[in-house]
Structure formats: structure tokens, C-alpha cells
Image (cartoon, rainbow, N blue to C red):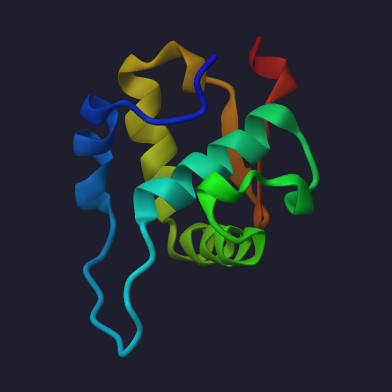
Length: 103
């Protein structure tokens, strides 16, 4: 199982992210989202996040921000429309996980 979004999946969800201009360079949203998916799929602790996804602190803080803004729920709903492997992802109460009841 791949933990990385396909180009087609990314094209569908990229417009869901707000465009924000700050003084800092923007983090790579796709890389961060792939890291979030890796955490959800592997159920590993954040500190075990492979470096290819960026610092775990950055990925975790973006997860919290996207949950608070409702972006992650929109992403999951969009992916669930056509991609069966995302049907059991959930985002609630500041956490992302796999809904074991969905199997």
C-alpha cells in the first residue's frame, strides 16, 4: 500500500487548501498530507515519521490546523468519493485515525 497521493488525487484536493501569503515560505502541503496519511495508516508515533515527509512537528501542527479549519474533513470526503482505501479514514477531535468499524 502506498502512503503517497497520486497526481490525480492531488489535483482533486489541492483546490481545497486556502492560499495564504505569510512571511515564511509555505510548507509543501502534498508532502505534509502524505506524512499525515503515513501516520494514520501505520499507527506509529509522530517521532517515527520518516524524514521524507518533513519534521514531525511541522506535519503534526499542520494536521491540527487543517482539522480546526475543516480542511482535513473536506479532503477525506473528496478522497472517499472514488478511492476505496480512504473509506475508513476519520478526522475528529483534533485527531486523524482509521475507523475500525468501517471494515
